[in-house]
Length: 303
Image (cartoon, rainbow, N blue to C red; front, side, top):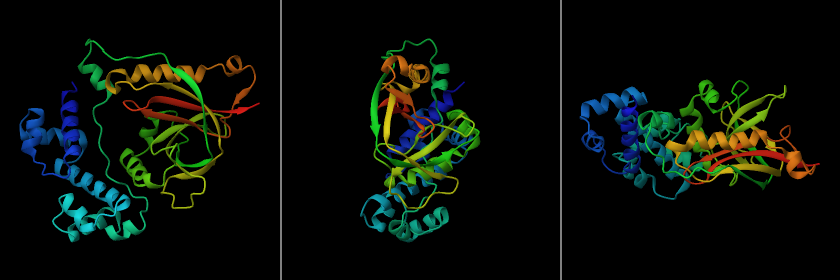
């Protein structure tokens, strides 16, 4: 049922690794073993854009990051990502972001960078590979204490969404994630870009947020639809699972960590030393399966 999700994801991954090279439909078809015309039609069906448009967008996003983070000449960046001239990059940049490459380099404002697409998910993998032996190493979730200094959180504090799935039902993933990518250069080193989580609203209900941390003294631009809030420094209970295979183990790992996080008996473990502090600070969620693993952070205070 999801064979094409898997095949098109392989096409996306291959293009991501070769954005500075010539990318042809014939080569993409060779990578997945289907005809060029079928690859083209299925890519458009699943991604909502043509291969050519997707590649152009990702090259433009990479060019923007290079303008922001390196001292490379604009002409060299243009040539690297397949633009015929600096003027061609300037036209594409202005059409997409409303500013020139030079203007963006001088003042890298928040812009919705075209993001790397993911269309093949664990539920698709499990449907395709049901019954296959899982060679992973799922363990029990653990916990530790971690101090996070004062910072600001810049994100969408969604009043309707209770979890990750809800959040993307109400928000445009491409716009939100692309905007966050464009703000990576001002992010906090601990509360990094795409750190999501939960907050308590005025009725005491847990709702979902998505964005990034920025330094406590940040005074720059806040993207449209985002909100900037101060988060005091303090300790967090970190409930975690070490790195795991995203495709085959994600649901099980997240379930174990969240079950421990939301049912942890703080009073029993610390005999009255700490109390939850979610009225003052949000809970955070770190999801880096192959690198860090999965973590849920709940703020605590000393009684």
